Structure formats: C-alpha cells, structure tokens
Image (cartoon, rainbow, N blue to C red; front, side, top):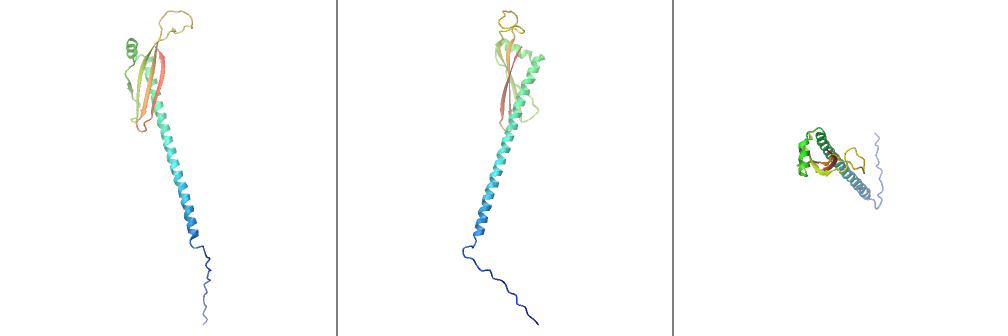
Length: 160
C-alpha cells in the first residue's frame, strides 16, 4: 500500500502588512458612507423646497381665486351694497372669508375705496367734460396655507 503525504505550501510572512488592508478598506467605507449621508440630506432639503414652492403656489392661486370671485360678484351686482357703503363712508370693508374647498387653505378678501377717478369713462385727457366720475376701488385677496405657513396677498383695482 502506498501512502501519499500531502504537503501544504507555506506562504512566507511579509513584514509590515499585518492588518493594513483592513484599515484602508475601513477608511474607504467610511468615506463612502459620508458621501451617501450627504446625498440623503441634500435630497431631504430639495423635497422641502419643492413642498414649500407648491404651498406658496397654492396660496397664490387661492388669493387670486378669492379676489376674482369678489370682482365677479361686483360685476354682477351681488356686492353692490358693500360698494355703496364704502363710497359713502370712504373706508375699507371688513374682510370676507371665501371658501376654497380645502381645509388647509384660508382665503379672505376686502375691498378698499380709493377715491374718485378724475377722468370720466370714455373721455380723452385734457377735455373738460362734466359727468359722472367713476369711483376707484381695490380688492385685496389674501390666502394662507396652514400646513406650511405660506401666505400671499394680491391686489386688483377696478372702477365702479
């Protein structure tokens, strides 16, 4: 019977390489982890910026819609009593809440009397024409989004 002896090759130890690869790998892993964390933080900041821009746009659109609704009501005669009261008293109307069909958005509108326009409707400048002078008003629409604190005010002038 023949016996075979197995021989294991011995690798000679090289001086100065005990664990240096491990340290280099850990440093590289740490740097990659820091880069990943920085990327996550940047993504979070960009998400917040996009949400704030969206809330600001929602507030602006709500303020515009509220002012347009009141201006439409003035044109159709619904707000005539409020306009006439301001013309006589020469003051600012109380704020009127407008339903925006969104529980997070609140919109308010007020109408301000600015005075008499010195140029009659349909007349040229410099022509001395008597007649009824139109009254100038300004609608101020304001809206805010409660979830983000975004607030916007818009102004629209009109003559009546």
